[in-house]
Amino acid sequence: MILLPLLLIVFNHLLIIQEESVMKTYELHIKNMVCERCIVYVQQVLQQLNVSPNRVELGYVIFSAPYESVLPLLEKKLNEVGLQIVHDKTEATIEEIKVEIIKYLNEVENGKKLSKLSEYLADQLARNYFSLTKLFSKNENTTIESYVINQKVERVKRLLREGELTVSEIAYRLGYSNVQHLSNQFKKVTGLSVSEFKASLGVLSRSYPRSLDVFGNRAIAA
Image (cartoon, rainbow, N blue to C red):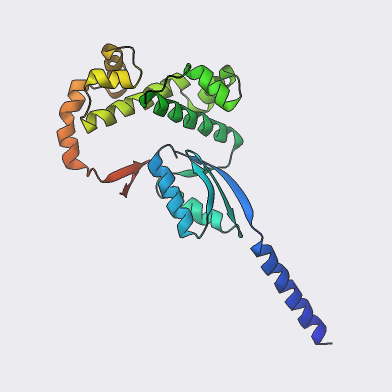
């Protein structure tokens, strides 16, 4: 009589162990994961959690794990540096748009000749560009065009900080029609002329160490 309950306890325990040993695959969209440094950080976090990623790229990660408790631990680590797991389908699409824009600008900066951004996004996301712009504007309170302008200006800032290219070379590399086009957009977004921004770099470099990468409002030592 005593043996039967004991066998049931052992059997249930074995079932729990078996369930835990079954690997489950997770596919996650991650907000603000738009740089190579972000990819490295996510890979490091997964390694710390003893999880081997199947695929890690801008804005997206696939990994397998035998237990669901890894998700809150992963989310906590990501939130610490301004990264967020996206749970909403619409928000996931918005992040896909942003990631594809980043990829497009990367290709342009690397000298690759591409089709217009509207055609590129429509092809990559397999959706009509008008529907993408409508969705983006509704949820981000800005247009895709404005988002692209801001992203390009951030790249201008980075290249100015690096100090290896002239303004004319930067304009050509980033696909501006001419220097004046770059200067006008830069002034509109930052409130500073290019020359004023360059003059401020000495002050900024003394205030912020170059060995830091910024995620959101947080900084991570390189």
